[in-house]
Length: 285
Length: 343
Image 1 (cartoon, rainbow over the protein chains, first blue to last red):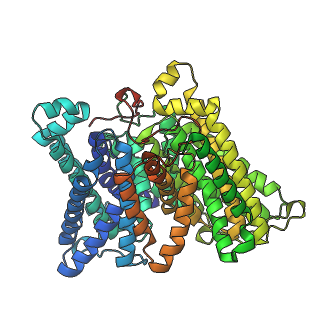
Image 2: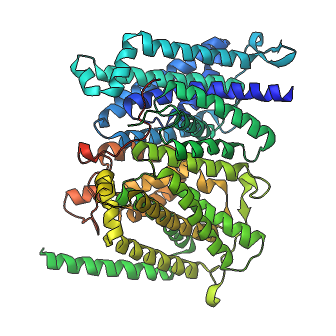
């Protein structure tokens, strides 16, 4: 019974990791930029979700508000900062996102303070659900379902829409795609918005399932980076596999070696980098 | 002015600065002296980041972990277990060298953004380890009551003596770094920064040269960490946290990462700015973040880069480079790992 609970905890954690990592890895695959403010996006999305919940009283509205406001922020950041230093300067872009994360975290601290906050989920989905004789919080099943839904939607977007075709082609050859008349800047902006949207949604989900506090942004960013490095940068499937793997490691680590739980997450990363530096599903160049 | 006259002027100015620094305890109060000591130990950390970034073109976010590690080791062995000096200090530096070597083996397979991500992850893992570990390292509380030793009868608890020792160490550190930049090793490192592939084709052991640079840089951070622990008497997870890591990176870029004196100038400005801003607003990180954005967008080569452009500063030894963040030519782009598609 305890084993099942731990596995379910790991799945919940893994689902959150997937929502966080998928946006990050897709944006990296296309734009060669690692958004170092992804953790800050998560935190801010969660806080805005709390504010929206207070105003509307609806958790669904909070989820939408957290996601969409961060998507909008993503658009502003992409147009206002990243697009200014694009050509051949992916390190400058990454540094800009680092600075941004510092500002966001500090502003969030000024507004929401240093105490941990969490989002109350609606009674209808908070109730424990008993499945196969196992009682487990209902919201965690909801979180897993949302992650599965997001995975399906991302797959559909990438493989069944014109946007997805343009994205996949741009990953391989940006110049040709641009020459074919696709507005590459628009593709970039949309992708960064999608990535930010997922970060904001993850913030509301994480804020409901865990709690939000200063410092959480860098912790989440670290987990997300480990997830996408292990999975292989740019690979959606890789992110899914490594998110599930790391979720289990974290869950069992917390249960059996609480002082080492974060440290244990590092182990698969070291092994993967030593054997397969491009990550589990990364493409070798 | 002729070049001869310029050189004379530079020598005289340098002599004045050195004398002013050495005589400092005679004419400033304890607060100012402590701030200078802080400048020195953060200066070591900045040199660590600057060596990798300026010479090797690598943005490492792990250096604060080494800074914290040496502090933790001397706190653990010296303060808590009572080993006599210099055992804790040597053990601290040995731990730094060992960890840097192991981390170097992992991160030096990568370049550019992936390198940055990896070093961030490693640094954060160290941070979370010291934060979570309550049995040995006391979690958030850290280790308190660290005392500097008294080598050769010198009483390091006196601020002036501590300052002179730190200053001497820093001067020596700068000298070594200057020689390093002019050495074949330094030049090879510059070559790797420009084009790892070509250097590899020329027969240079690119991977091992980069690992060596990482270990040397870590040593500088470790020395800074020991001075910091002695001076403040305390080591906590804060020493390793990400905002500190980002701060020191900004310091180096602000001063001018492509210049020998960039990290030093950046540290002096940032530490004093810290003193000023902290009196005005609690939103220090916001101010620093905005400065960071402005520097990268407007003057990515930092203050010395701007001065050089208007002809007021030289670059220093070795082959330092104008813009570290833009590859000189397409072929200079390093082989990236895990360049992915969508699976």
